Image (cartoon, rainbow, N blue to C red; front, side, top):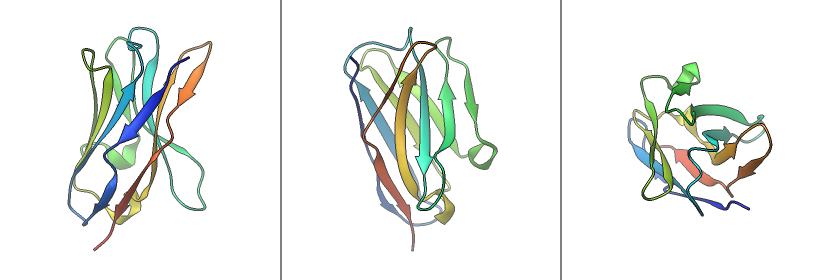
Length: 115
């Protein structure tokens, strides 16, 4: 069993930055791809960024150039650095670890972009 714990959410003004963290209970980066999803009120959960076991990254078009996913294998933590935040980035952000066999979710962290 893998536990994922997100942190770093909060209230930020438009144009600001936040860094989300997702701490895993064990070293899983060689086994699971790591992903950040978000879900805004009344909307479906959306894949925002992914980081493969080999280190390849991918982003949804709406965050390209503004968000960066990365990982620290020593700390067993994956990050989502978010900059130039917009009101439409407001959502609950979820960390996900998955491979072809199983997947795990964190509890989510709220990000609110508002003046």
